[in-house]
Length: 249
Image (cartoon, rainbow, N blue to C red):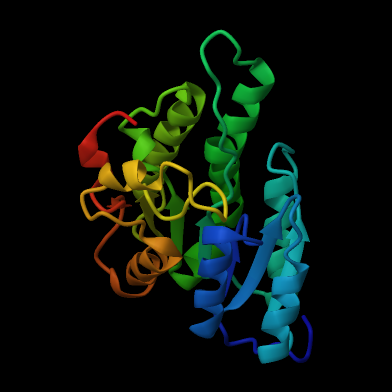
């Protein structure tokens, strides 16, 4: 363990932490005093780690891993324990997301979608279970409203997120009473890219609250579940502005 690291600070692993929701959660937890393990695959989390370490030296490390690789779970867990010697929070955020229209979907796509959205979170949770139990820690899974409400041309993704939702409920039973496990189901947090779609007005009309929530809506709910919801486990909270109420997307 690095001598500059505060051994009493809690530690969080955030998968897919280089951008978007994962990055926002990493920043929020770091602000709360956590050491953070920043997992990434293609988009590097090194710039974020440099930023966080400039604020508090030795408080952030990165680990690159392909969640399609069976060895990824142990790689990420061991990186956390080698650097910080403890683990308090696991955030399973990383996710593949793309359409798989009927007639063109492939086995490779199914494996990627199920690995990143369901199987990798399971095996990472399994790998982290013992150190999380030692700290009375928490697991937070980033689910999706499409686990229950289908999205057109995304059958495999919806199936994988449905498995993710069951993972949250099952782990809450398996790891109780030592580890709480909850989920957040975003539905209208961010546009798919940095630029709003050309049909932005039509898209917003499908959201009862009439706006996208941004990452802050996810962060606020995450911090509540992780730090204040001490009697909450096995729950998945939709943070979607009511979008799931609008039916099939």
